[in-house]
Length: 463
Image (cartoon, rainbow, N blue to C red; front, side):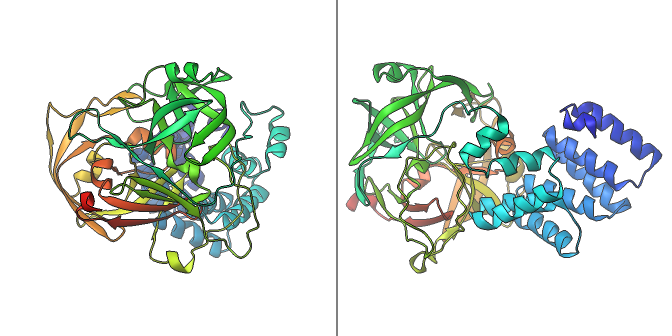
């Protein structure tokens, strides 16, 4: 529908509703209406619409739309099944291939994802969602030609030190006695030493303006940074650091995001753990060490140079490789820099929780909490994110979290609306695994293959 393609979803909804008045069993109208509601972030309305469509017009396009709703709800296995069933039935369902490509990317099955998005583009090159996903798989030079303009900042960031294995001290971030809020790194930006929080919920490097100016990082382009909070994306700009030194590692010509005020109290900024994704990342919080080592090389992989990663890099067609020594690792979903961990809350179906060492404590969405416990209000509770304070914060009476091979009982767990983060990722994030719990763990992360190993370390002070 033309209105939907132009982004006028309200007008498109009105037209689809008019069609349904004339043709109450129109699969195309139900599908179009469902997708408009998803575009407007009205997930409950989308689910209600597609469910009604299945009742009166159980056609394969409606099944594809149901998969899209499932995906946004965080029901990734259910979404995948709908799309696979449609394709196996022989239907030329371009958006089913698009959906499967998204699932494969989240599982780091990049070769399979590329085949899926290529097939989707072959079937329906005019679909804007398919087109944007397909273009993202092209080499940078081809993407520039496709858009007829250059992206704002080229990613020439590269590792210039020849280091395959290294250990870097983790700093205590403790703005008040006996109040640890995270682990930090000493990072030298253009010769200026800074203290930056290591945050698995962040991407790249973000520093406050005062730090950027001291390091001589000047504005190249204006941008916005989304995050937790009710003020919306935060104004920022991107500059280039000629040199970044972290322990024995040195990277050159790397993008750095700059915000007006400090991102976290008592530190100069945050650094996403994904910047080290070319390594096996070992966050040993009990021993206060960050260990970086070589990832097991798949038989087909060559000797590619290591680089500091951000969101501007070229796509990788390598499928997930699970080495024999990593068979016990937990398979997670990767959405950009974020790692979403399948997590069981009591007896409820599995949810997706964000692995977030930058979050002080575990948190849960009110919707997920209500499935297993009661919610209450506590005027003393406060949640602060990069996008400001969260207005409505609740307390969940009790929630037992199970992830990996671990189980933790949570009393009075913080609960707040996670919709803004879920909308960004396109799937439901039901909570956060935060530092107050993670500081007792030795966490090994394989970003390349979307694998995480959680190991509880009793009596960490004795190590």
